[in-house]
Image 1 (cartoon, helix red, strand yellow):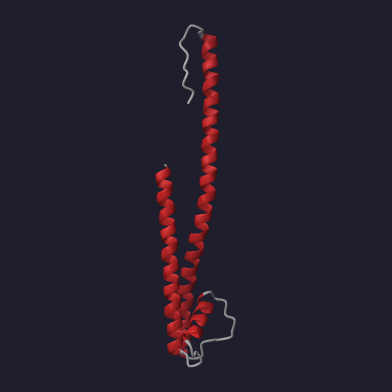
Image 2 (cartoon, rainbow, N blue to C red; image 1 turned 60 degrees about the horizontal axis):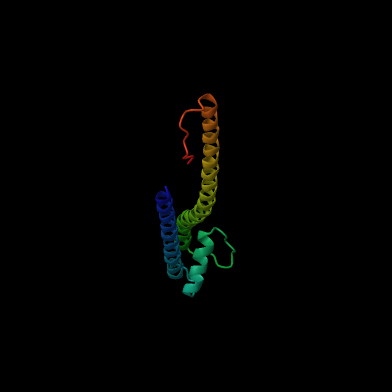
Length: 141
């Protein structure tokens, strides 16, 4: 059971890394694309800033696409960026939720084992009452 948790956790971490890498790739491509398409974007840094604000759908308005090609490209960056940024957010949330669930599952397991031990003691006590000469179980879990 512990192995399956570790495997799930490993897959989730890898998923987060893949979605982060994809996010960076989309932002880099977006930055280079805006830098190449837009005459008002003079540096790659400005292109990256426009790509980020566009992908995150923040839209500060300090730099905006002016050309038709830049606007079409912005639509693509919004669609791809929003999807990938949502994946990153979901992967991060899943990591935190998984940790909480694991702790709760461990506590439930401990409580269940405690209850089982108590029930076995009660069963043994009832058996002793019904048949005092019967052998008694010592292993209570």
